[in-house]
Structure formats: C-alpha cells, structure tokens
Image 1: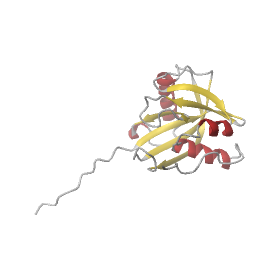
Image 2: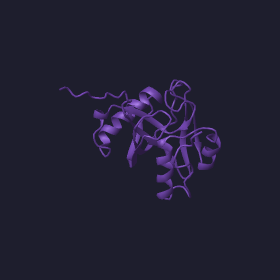
Image 3: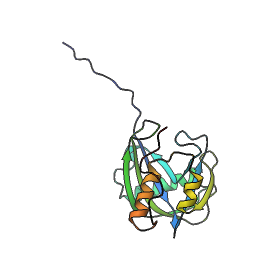
Image 4: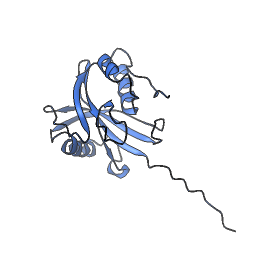
Length: 170
C-alpha cells in the first residue's frame, strides 16, 4: 500500500547579510526601490541576499566580505566596504511575505558615500533613531531593523529600542 505525501509549495527561506554603518547616534539608512520584491519603499539597512550554501558560518568574515563586495558592486557603485565584526543574527517567519528569514548583521564602514543603484535604493541618509521613526511611521519594518534596534539599545548605542519588536498588522 502506497503512502501519499503532502507536498507544500512553501517559499524557500531567505538568507541575507546586513551592513550597519553607524557613528555616534546616527545610522546610514537607504530607501528601498519600489521595484524591490520585499519591503519596497521602506527605509532599511544595506543588505544582500545569498544562497544558504554561500555562507555556512556567520562568524566567517571571509565569506561575509565576499557578499558585501558583491553588494557594493551591484548596489553601491563599487565603494569599498570594511567589515569590522558580526553584531547579531536572527530569524523569523513573522512578515507580510510568508518567508522564513535568516539575517546576519555586521558592523561595516564604507570608504566614501555610495553611488546608489536606483534598482535597489533610491535614497540614502544618516538618521538618528527619532528621524528614522518619523520617516518610517507609515511603513512596516522588517527583521533587520528589529535586530538593529534591539542590538543598538542593548549595546548602549541608543538609549531605547526605536521600533516595535513585531511588525504592525492591519
């Protein structure tokens, strides 16, 4: 007797590295293009997706540097990125896209202001937590900003978390 199996058409998990470029109480944010599949038009951090086999260990800065270099070539006009250290990682399936997301945040520095590729990012700005909140008041943030908010608060970079821990649902 054959046993029937149920095949689910669930989307593949999303894996990404996220660059956090910050100084004092400001962080460099980019506004995502309206053409982007996930979080179009949202102020976010610099990021690029990768296939799960492209990076096995979030502490492997050699792999992270390769991914950041690819992000720079594709999205930032080739500006050199220095990856200083791993900050935090997290995963969640609580988002409007029904994706399980695995993110790794890194402290980075760019040698100069990036030349944004408008297919990915339409604006860039140094913002305080309050300025970020004002610009993002009408948008739902993703896991990258929830991770950065919690990390910055717990590390004493910010005086409080600046976004909700969970996305707002209508």
